[in-house]
Image 1 (cartoon, each protein chain N blue to C red):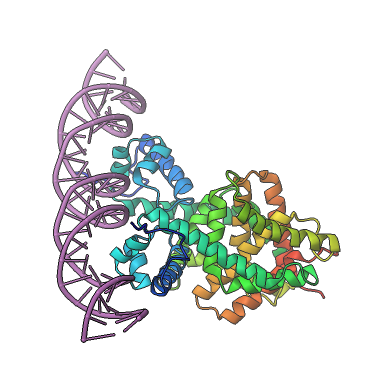
Image 2: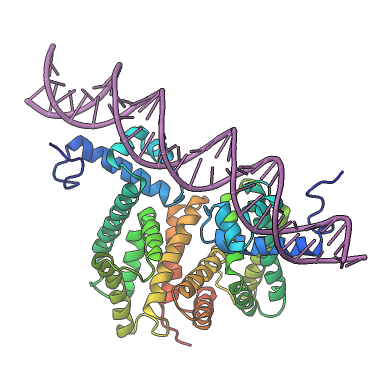
Length: 196
Length: 196
DNA sequence: CCATAATAGGACAACAATGTCCCATTTTGT
DNA sequence: ACAAAATGGGACATTGTTGTCCTATTATGG
């Protein structure tokens, strides 16, 4: 006998792994902009037949869960590359924005997800991630390089918001470079300790 | 003979005006958080039967259009109350955030709508509104009280973003007062001219 | 109090999305 | 080239939403 879903990664053939990734990439890109997109649209965006999509993710919920994990992994990878523990906290925050900027679809999806499960259940995984961002901000506040009058959670939320605005600007025609520049400049101002 | 939709406001009886408002208020509150909410959910939130909802807005598109107009009116009223042309631009921006804060659902809906019609069609109405916000920011930049290194459109987008974050904080348990305080403090930092 | 306006509630067909199968075709790996 | 794997594409029942209609009930205003 033979079960469709065994271990997600180990038993998948190279071909299946590739199409799986193609689906997930298309899905996170599409669903982050329109969470109500139909399975047919996802399949079309991924360049596969709807039947194939259902073969990989039998039900819509399966796809959504996989997209959530996929996006979380991307965010986690971006966080790791930003090395939040290295150097001045201010620079690390900027690095974090910089890395996140290239994965705005995954960021947005992860953000929506984090809102949906308000403060209900708490996966140790995700918490570890958000906690890592929080630790960075609090480190900066301890250093005195990040505004201590704003709660760390608020600053974190502002990071999502500023990144979102930058991504939206790109969608409306702004250059990626300019959007990133504005994003980072704004973030510097937000976290800067008030000296007046 | 007798047409259902004549002039929206003149021929409506007091009763119809009241229920119409109740529906629109519930709809803007619900749809701003979940644009895919069904007509049944809207009717339930408004406390009316689904048949009544369809009597006022025969098709879903009719409701959506009405909600858009309703939200735009609320935003316009808030803008008017903030008196963008009076006094220092910095204070006016803060007043604008303050007034908008109490109508976040209308703000959010208007924001989504403004994104959907990217730069395609341009209703003179809405443009007049966004133009008014823009004029305020540019006035501040001319005064030297608002950062000139950030484009006015970006600052405007940051206003939406910061207001959104504040509203989201409230949804997650933060006091309205504290959220507003954080919102205004952050906005002051964003628009402040860089002096370093 | 009474005629009229307005609503609630349900039945109904039309429609789109979903999930399940099945089979022909293409691709992969050897 | 050949067998196995993977996909494309369609048919199908199912479900939820939508839009329409009708009737009984409630609320409104003179």
